[in-house]
Image (cartoon, rainbow, N blue to C red; front, side, top):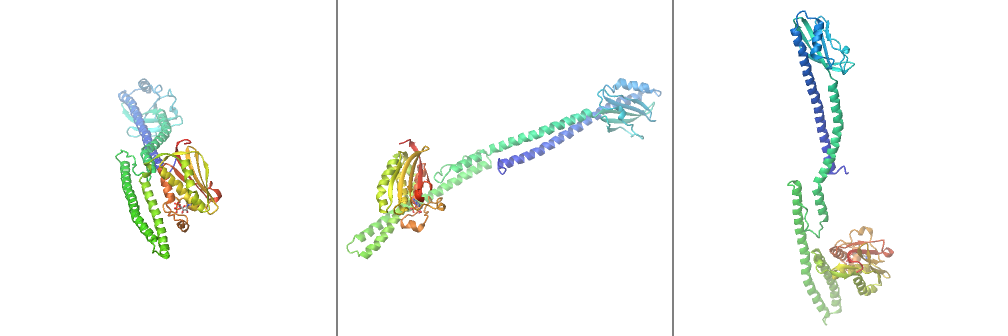
Length: 472
Ligand code: ADP
C-alpha cells in the first residue's frame, strides 16, 4: 500500500471523518439515552410519590404512624418493587421507612435523612450510598394530620448497567465499523480510479507509430470524462502534427532526388568529355563523391519516412532468414576483404520469419556494413541465426572497436554518431541503425546490443523476431 497514493489518502481522510462522525453519533446516543432513561425514571418516581401524597392529604388528623405504614405497604409494596420510601414528620420523627429491596440493589439504612430546613417544593436528588446509587424525590406535604416529608426513590443500578452495556457495545462496534468502512472506502476509491488506470495503460501503449489509438472515454459526466476527451483531442492534434512533419520529410527527400540525379548526370558528363583537364576531373570527382553521399542520405531519409507511414507492412511473405543472412554475408564478403576483415557465417540454424524481404535484407546489410566499417584490419565479422525462447534470433558480431557504454542508449537515434569525425570518413550520417530499428519495430522485432556476446571487446547486435513457424 502506497501512503502517497490518492486511494490511500482519500481512504485515510474518509476514515478520519467517519471516526469523528461515529464518535459524535456514539456520544450523542449515549448522552441522549441516559437523559431519556433518567427523565422516565424521575417521572415514574414522581407518580408513585403522588400516590402517597394523595393518601396523606386524605388522612384523619389523628391517624397513627402504623396506619400510614400499612397503607403505603398495601399501595406500593416498596420492598417487592425495589423502591425506597421514607415518610418523616416535621418534628424529625420517622413515620415509615421501607426495608431491604428484593433485588438488594441498595440498603435503606445507608440513606441519610434530609437535613432541615426541607426544600419548599418537590426536589429530585441522586444519592450515592455504599450499597448503590438511587434517584430520590422529596416533597413536603401539609396534611390534616400534620406536616410530612415524603421521600421516594428507585435504584439507579438498572439504568447505569444499561448505560454501561451501551458503552461497551459502542466501544466494540464503532472501531469495527470504522475498520470495515475504511476498507470498503479504500476498495471503492480504487474501483472509482479504475478508469484512470485503464487510461494510463492505453496511454502507455500509444507510441508515435500508432497515433490512431484513443483513450477509453469513461461516461461519468464529470472531470474524468472531460479529461479523457481532452487527452483524445490532444492525441488527434499530435497525430496531425506528426503526420505533417512525416509528409514534409517524405516530400523533401522525394523532391531532392531528381535535382541530385540531374547534378550527378551533368557532372559525369563533364568528366567524360575529352577536353576535360585532369585537374578539373579530379575536382568534379570529389564533388561527385559529395553528391553520392547526399544521394545516400536522401534515400535513407526517404526510407525512414516510408517506414514511419507504415509502408513496410504491405508486401509481407514468409522469409527464410537463414538463407537471407548467409546470402547477404556472401555478397558483402568482398567489401569486407577489401578492408582486410574476415566476414564468415557463424551458427546458422533455420529460422523463418514473416515480413518484407527487401527490408529485412536492409537490416542485415546495415548491421554488416557497420560491423565491417568499425572493425580494424585483421578483425572478424560473423552472422548467426537461431531459434531461442520462441523467437527467431539474428546476430551480427564483430571484433571491432566496440561501442562505449555512454553511447549505447543513443545509437539507434536518428543522426547519432558515436564519433562524428570517424563516422563521416566512412560516409555514415547516423541513420543506418535508425532505419534498422524502424524496420525491426515494423516487424514486431526488437533489437539490442549485447556487449557480453561480442568477441574481443567488439559489438554484438541482436534482433529478436517473432517466428512464423518453428525451424522454418
Ligand atoms: P552510421 O551510418 O553513421 O554508421 P549508424 O546509425 O549505422 O550510423 O550507427 C550509429 C553509430 O553507432 C555509428 O556512428 C557508430 O559510431 C556506432 N556503431 C554502429 N555499429 C557499430 C559497430 N558494429 N561497432 C562500433 N560502433 C558502431
